[in-house]
Every structure is written in structure tokens, then in C-alpha cells.
Image 1 (cartoon, rainbow, N blue to C red):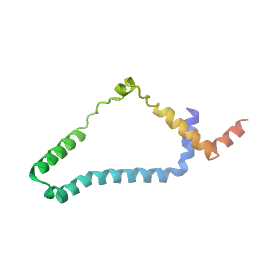
Image 2 (cartoon, rainbow, N blue to C red):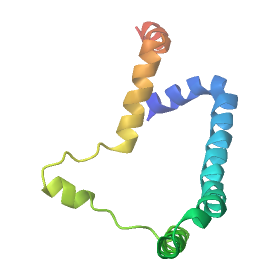
Image 3 (cartoon, one colour):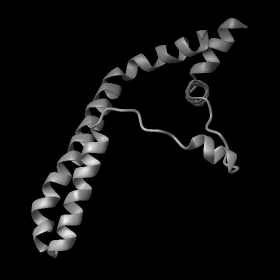
Image 4 (cartoon, rainbow, N blue to C red):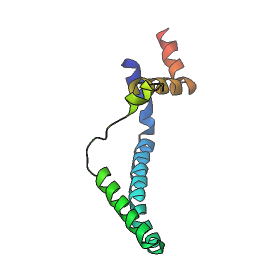
Length: 116
């Protein structure tokens, strides 16, 4: 745990970048939601009636399904049973990534030299 906190301290210099990336990710999410509302008026009029009704029903279904707020079931266990590799632990992956980044950028070496 001490290593993780030390590595997170290194990221303090990039707080502005991290916050900007979160804001930009939110903008991308909002633009994806708006895209559905923009595509409808442009393309639905050009579709034949039967296809237009099907597309509208599909969009209504997905809107209701995704905005339900319920956790969606996962089929990862079934994939593992079929021979797919299980996903790695998220905390361990983050720790390994940060350690790699620190070593790659020379941050980990200074701590090691001071300890020795």
C-alpha cells in the first residue's frame, strides 16, 4: 500500500491534466448522447416507414434499458468456462502500471537509491 501511495504522490503534478481529462470524457459522453438526438431528425425521414418504426422502437428500448440505473448482468464467468482468460485484478493492474511508469520515467530509482 505504501508503494501505491508513493506512486500516487507522483501524479499530484498532473492534477490539472487529470481533471481536464475527466471533464473532456464527460463532454464525449454528452456528445454521444446528443448524437442520437441529432441523427434521428436527419436520417429517419429518409427511411421507409417500416424501417423507421423499427429504428424508433429500437432507440426507445435502448434508451430505457441504459437509463434504468440497474446493474447489467455479466457473462464473464461463462467466457472463462469456455476457455477465455479471466480479467486481471484492477488494483494489481493499476499498481503494476504505476510502478512501470515510475521506473520508466526515473521516479522509482531515486527512492530505491535513498533506501540503500
